[in-house]
Length: 70
Image 1: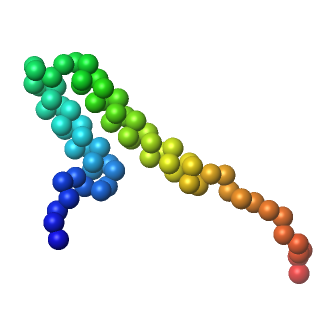
Image 2: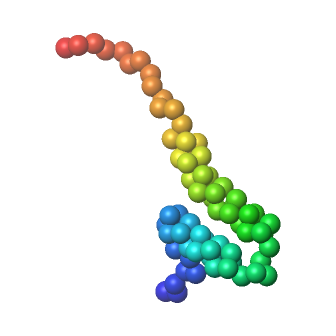
Image 3: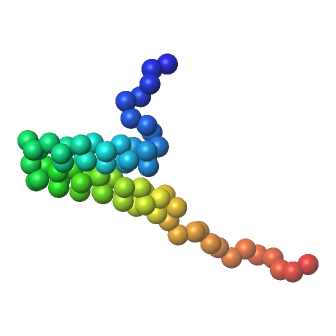
């Protein structure tokens, strides 16, 4: 079984992405525009998890059932 290049856990992946961004920030050949775009993509990636959860969970489906106390 081969190792994956990035972990599948979203938090670990986000941490690695931030490390790559930090290393790139030290490289003067990387423009600030590219750093900003990468930072924005990381933020969108992190925020998309919350949006996905809300979409999947949605509001609970409640309904009234017939019956009563017994």
